[in-house]
Amino acid sequence: MVGLAAAASLARGGASLLLIERREALAREITARNSEVIHSGIYYAAGSLKAQLCVEGRERLYARCEKLGIPHRRVGKWIVAVDAAERAQLEALRERGMRNGAPGLRMLEGAALAAEPSLRAVAALESPSTGIVDAHALCLSLEAEAESHGAAIVLHTEVEAIERTSQGYRIATRGAGGERSSVECAAIVNAAGLESDRIAEHAGIDVDARGYRLHPCKGDYFSLAPGAPLRCSRLIYPIPAGPGLGVHVTLDLGGRMRFGPDAEYVARPRYDVDPAKATQFAAAASRYLPGVRAEWLAPDYAGVRPKLAGPGVGFRDFVVEEESKAGLPGFVNLIGIESPGLTAALAIGERVAALLPGA
Image 1 (tube, rainbow, N blue to C red):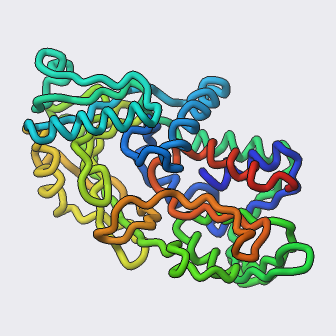
Image 2: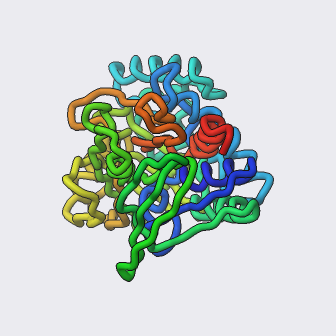
């Protein structure tokens, strides 16, 4: 998503552009394995790139979806408190979200909570601008836009080395059949997701010294059985805790309910979902949806976050950095683009184009 957004922005501005993708098709990793939520901008530190780009990207994303007919829906979200201590945390989230520019936030209590009869909570923070989107349809629109402006896309191609030259850079690649080739370019945008720290290393950046080393964090999802006597009409999130936002209720555009994701740091990306975790998921969700039972939950899918913050580390912002100061003019790093990366993608693309005005 982020790479395509950058490609579309640069191609629209007249850049001669090549997008290199190692998989057999576009958007097969982070973009294909997330909640597809359009975030409003509540959670992130004031003034951070995550906050700024989420708010800007949200408006761009909704406008694009409406203009091009990309499937999406403003379903809204409740962040819920189950006791008085969590109620105070909701107030803090509301204040942060208002500072960040998340629109329409309001506290709900008492009879207002009856709109979700399965819910048990003392209060909820409503975010009416939160939505869901068909991420693949959005990617296809960006791919079409980039190609319509002359961008070329190559699949099954992995970057093996990056060399600085007098004119810019030489990128050495290997195809799916082992064939090797190279391309010379004036600028590089590193939007490699889970491999973005490795691409930065190829360019000669000490990722540990710069704090660019990624810590993969896996999140599993379970789907609710179609016949289960439980229904939510909007996204339901707990108070955030740990490296993720907590096991929450997500909806797809067909109205199907999922629970997840949890958060587990892993040595390398993997996508298995242990069916035995249904008990753990049911326990987490039952804090605010007391009717949930483990036997109603089935393994769905897993995703992996490209986190810059390792276990026990606090907030880390997106890296959106042109690396002239590191001796790499025209090399733009996009690293640690986890949530709200989908929401922020179009704004990140515009930021990249501004960092490479001569491209």
